[in-house]
Length: 257
Image 1 (cartoon, helix red, strand yellow):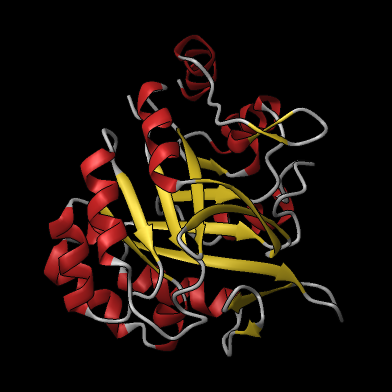
Image 2 (tube, rainbow, N blue to C red):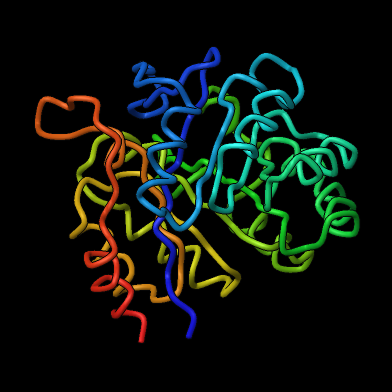
């Protein structure tokens, strides 16, 4: 039986683990490797690790970080940040990551997705789309470079391209809900799900296990990722690495039967 995955998403900024709100004001919450050690103990389903500096700084992946993460991780993990070539993707997988994520590079050159898929396997290719509401006329738009640039492609058109190409997983991140912990933008996720049944992970806004339960119950076998929910505790957002225990997760997974 397939079931949903509950995935902590770790943002790396200046070598440290941070959490943002609407992709702004990164708050330092600790060392990435220490966080991974704690998540190991909590037996998380998988991890997403995103270097949010790489693309903005026009540099490649931090292979040293990836190597150290792979050494520590006892769970599958996906790495994204600065990936623009097949060689980089192959090295990331060779270092121990199970998946490699692209965003701006995929938008600029969809051919790279096929090439990486041929090199490491389609199942290991992930596209992360950061999406925000348009200021005028409604609808949504894809943004890149920590939401500082608007992609020169329409959301619906790009989803169609991804369906034609075939990728392992699509990660949809709501910029407007990022870090607010006030629930998901289901209108956005509905829009994407209407166009494709490819494996999908949603994130941006999770503030409680009830939010995760609602998402799993609505979409069934998807991934639900969160950042703030798993690094903060309480209304004052004290830093505390946390994750639902096996009994709590079992109740959530039951919804996918």
